[in-house]
Length: 112
Length: 111
Image (cartoon, chains in turn green, red):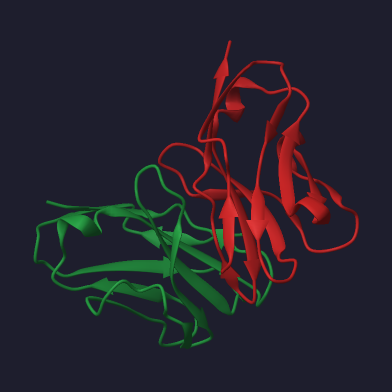
């Protein structure tokens, strides 16, 4: 079946701009996760949704970052006033609650 | 505090040689345990997982891992490495939907 998909695969933007990253989870998975991975590092947790609500957003670095999942399926990670330090790979994963997380291919964000 | 350690940043092995990648964790209670592999520019692919039961788990691509409670370890092994195994490997304990990743071990395979 279809896995987790993320769009775009690459995003280049200028400092100060607004960006949206999209994640389509595996059908039927109620849990959805966002991670950020900097070069040479392991993924770092950002936020976890159970259904439509954010069950844990403790990993969001500051208030420029927020994410939504209005219908409990597709999620969008939104970054305002981007900074060069936001450049990273953004990974999305989905799962049935408490079980194995399956990852998408990621979105490579570059802030110039 | 919960933490995971992969002591080896980079390992080089010859094709056909055996491999062991180390993972140690510190959690109040035994977490679920996962190994993922990441090829350059790609997402994470699940290799294997441990929830409970038999402490030796088999995964894809000929990988296996052994859970040792007394050592808080979950080391990944493969008896004979192939050139296509060159990648970054991440150990990831998870408890209550909170998954933490190690810093990763980069595997280079020599011909």
